[in-house]
Image (cartoon, rainbow, N blue to C red):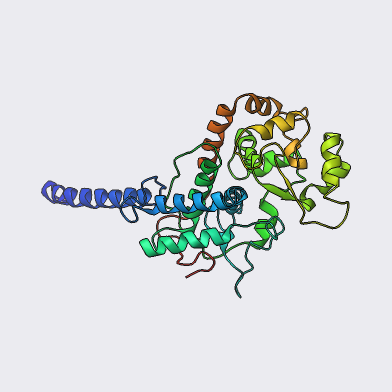
Length: 329
């Protein structure tokens, strides 16, 4: 049997290793968390650089605000790569087909040049520090603000993926022909509630959609304002002219407001999936609430954006920090 003195001499050593590994565990856990102050020391001018560039881009073309917001959404929803990781920005390589040519993105996503210009400025200010994934999260917020919408605190510290998923982009991003149950399910799969879904759909208060996205609605749906349908049919024929555009919110397509929801009350949603939010379903009351109270919409939208921006980010030592957003290092 070991003596009491032998046992007592080993206790401090055991405690030392216990607390040592405990500290390492918490340090690793902490390093893997997103933080609004992530670049305060490593790149203190990162946020002002991004904000200035977004303001200039939106001032030049107000539609660009919607395009930049959409990039972040389409990045986060493709979770196989695994989430908000900048995978949407990658060009095709010999090793994988990127997400840019997937159905929801092809001839539709834009704003890549703006992101490239921002990345170049950040690389000059602080080499290989700010991730492309974080750029997308910040430009989404700054675009909404530039168009009169709410602000929110962006959590930072995402790292960039080294691959992309063409197939997941085709399956994970909600489609314009989705019904309400499809929408609820698609957002739930990403950890987002029905309330989050209705709030995030309000992003369609800005931007435009291609004819191919709303053709079926204006020719086949019955829950559409007849004058709106007739007007849209003049520029979106039953076949051809797929790339002709129409505003998602015909009232104020370059202002971030609650008119999108007011349109839904009058059956003036552009996409089939838009109008699904109001028309006798479980989300009618939320749509009516936002239509009457823009402050409520702004608050819920901001909260949902923070939540969406936290979908499966790469952190710590996972992934990389790209020097060029369009290709891996």
